Length: 388
Ligand code: PMP
Image (cartoon, rainbow, N blue to C red):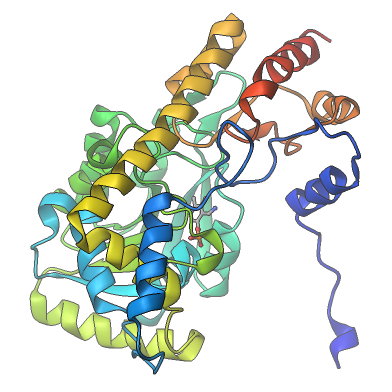
């Protein structure tokens, strides 16, 4: 039976990982993979989280099932971080999920259960797992161009036109901050306009917030989401803690669902739980429990906020160094988060691999993939590639 499965095009990022692993050069530069690295090139566990894990190990008495909602204290503790002034809105329900992926999968399956004919408007390029997750829910995808790579700018007029072409009940998938793969975030005015169009057209906004704190700051990175929550009666937030808590493999996230009235939210959450039960029954506990301990302890929380600020500062200082090196790279300082796209052809990207520098074919690179000692070599090689 299984030999009838069609071949799949393998993920090109996986191919890059294989190339990196096969390169014996001890000073190879891997800016393909999407994890935060510090100045020494490590992906550390935040000290605040490590302390929380120790406390968890000492204090946890049982690993008996928690139930479909997961750790409700975790969801309550991350809620004010993500939702800000909307945290007390009883029309917003929340549930713990296995990472941002789990939250997105739940969100789109929920929408498909409510409105199978809904179309999902997605700006491209986007994180390459968005389309498969949406397609997995059975909903139809409508793509529109979001970013002009050569002009290094958001194609805002086209985004607006696409959203205006949406019909009542269609879905707008929006990156909350630190757009992956372009780093191009909407500014305040653009968010206001998008929030207004989404509300006027009766679209259901799904805000994917996977990098809060790593762009401009916690409040700032959720400012667009807050505008959307201000203007739309119904909205969905897919939240990931995997980057800002450095818990990638522990799979920590949350889904927030807003409807117009509390009773409707409660009803929607019964469906959310049913879908979660079919998918994973209940989310993994360890990472969320540790994150909860951090968030509930003022000292650990303060330490964590400082650690995230240090990650953000490193991202933005490397952005500034790259931008200062060449006017053609100045745009890198105007963008946020771990990724941007270099104005390189696929050929140029491939030739950089001869110098042990590895990034995605599209020119997307992880700004903090390189150690401090590798930044100058990286910049020089990119400039040479652009000239060549
Ligand atoms: N959304 C975006 C835009 C992402 O980049 C990622 C992770 N790379 C996710 C969601 C999912 O994150 P998680 O690892 O928590 O599932």
